[in-house]
Image (tube, rainbow, N blue to C red; front, side):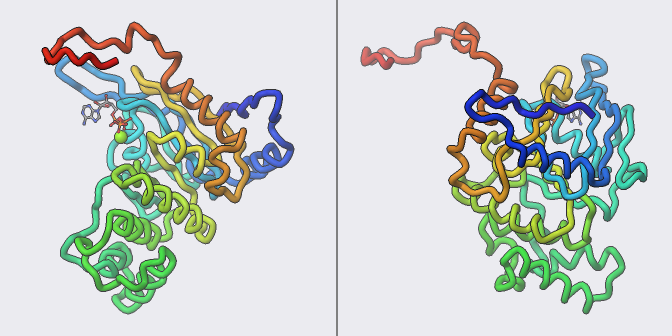
Length: 300
Ligand SMILES: Nc1ncnc2c1ncn2[C@@H]1O[C@H](COP(=O)(O)OP(=O)(O)OP(=O)(O)O)[C@@H](O)[C@H]1O
Ligand SMILES: [Mg+2]
């Protein structure tokens, strides 16, 4: 797979540390291999290409973010990787094995809250473990460990409706991780949260990822979120959906909120913004002239 080391302006060349970090990541085994993936949907207007020519190698314990405009096929792509939908062409391998449906090697966290409302927090985490064949005692003690890991040991007997949105998503992460997947697939998992909770969740996720042997494929609309979380960022374009650039994130780890104003962070964000939004066309931005006020107090 080709990828682009981010070309920083003269004042901040890519440091040897960053180059070394990515050399080490590339030396790790490939956990997820996506080759020439393509998805079409049959619609009333005919066959629509959701995305095509999508190829990616994701290495063990890499944190890869995908960003791109609405409709470029991000959710479709991650659903196919999860085995919830079928590709129209191409191949997906997890640890060298072809994906043909859902499996315990992939855990998924969605944007919407997907906990079972009739089960307690602990019972939600136990669900996958019991489905995987663990007896109740084992599932119980493992679920507790995972809840401790995400900082929710105290609410194990609460029901989902008693939790905040951020807590629900932490339970969803614990539930997905409890099966010890090779890859955690996350489709805008913090998209429904307020800005402050979202920041906290990003930091929790990095802390969890440090402790668990898991590779993360994370979809987001939020440029700050991608810059803060990712090792590499895959930028997709629309019509048809495709990969337009893969960028190595130069922001050093461990990440802190203070880095949001660092030259690396701002340069990366600027580059992503350019790729996604392109140069602003003033004419295109104009709305049709339809006036619904006679008040005379003109606004600028
Ligand atoms: N079941 C379906 N039938 C027909 N077309 C579909 C179906 N699911 C998705 N599409 C189309 O595929 C394209 C990609 O959709 P997808 O939901 O993957 O985009 P996305 O990048 O996740 O968008 P968003 O950022 O808004 O979540 C869109 O044009 C969408 O209309
Ligand atoms: Mg989507």
